Amino acid sequence: MQNRRKVVLIVILVIISIILAFLSLMTMFVPRSNSWASSVIQIDKLHELGFDGSGVTIGIVDTGVDSSHQEFDSSSFIAWSDSVSHGSTYYDDDDHGTHVAGILASKGSFQGLFSGINMKGITSGATLIVAKSIPRNQYMFGGGNDSTIADSIQFCIDNGADIILLSMGMSPDNVDFDENSKTIERINQAVQNGIFVITPAGNDGQDDDGDVCFPALMDNVIAVGALSKGNSILSFSSKGHQYPSTQNPNKKPELVAPGDEIMSTRINGAYGELSGTSQATAYVVGIIALLLDAYPEYQHDRAKNQNETTIQLFKEIFAKTARKVGSLKGNDDVYSHDDLYGYGLIQAFEAYKELAKY
Image (cartoon, rainbow, N blue to C red; front, side, top):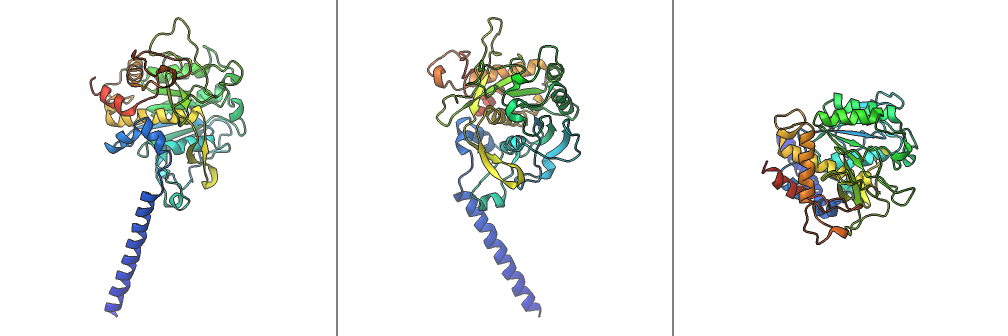
């Protein structure tokens, strides 16, 4: 009887070993989703150094999140606010916030591998605050309003965000913003506390005036445009305003990042590709989180964080180290800027090396 038990145990262990070996092989043979994007902006190099955003908290102001997706670990989500319907549990009735969150926090599930999806978020070690500010079916129209967005930003501040990804729909100019709005006040409050606020440049490049608008126009906000897989600007990516009074490194947009057919999580356990400046913004947010993991003294409540000065320091470094693409290609001036390409394509590893000098 005892020998039989040993045999059964050995067989079970062998089966488990075979299954684990098979799954390990699958991770090798199933191509890593979005690997082209991670490579072109050097995220892979920071991952190789062991950085995954651990110790960093990211606030996502968007349509919510489907936290039950198999790619997510529930421990990644530390705070939830719903300023639209005041629900007490995580949900996403418009899909966009879940897609953005997956770019950052997906863990790489076996279920995904069996579906041919090899997901691994930029900042799988970070924690997330999720604040729903956009009602159902309103993202396409610049949903939300000044009050719900402002309340969401305040929630992120109160719960310890180091970075806030502020996504307000494809046409944020439909929201009634001005210099005296509550949203602008809350953004200024965040920045004055040394919290990074990153926003999409906008997806209206082919509509209306096609320009970057408030609050992305604010000096201490980083506005992000979207590039194709061929490193050319995507036609929908909004164009920057070049006011004579705007000084480096605050011209808009500041940076561009991959935003073309990005694979990520969708609601109800699905996967899918989306293109947009929000996806590009998630990559910039992810890079900042990796840098704050590498240099935790720059997190908003740490020794080297000098509030607005820290935000400006990072913007200076990003401008200096950005890869000159598109119309900027071949320009040796580190502050050369284009209305579409900003200061260039963000480079994570170059920024990491540059920050070490300070």
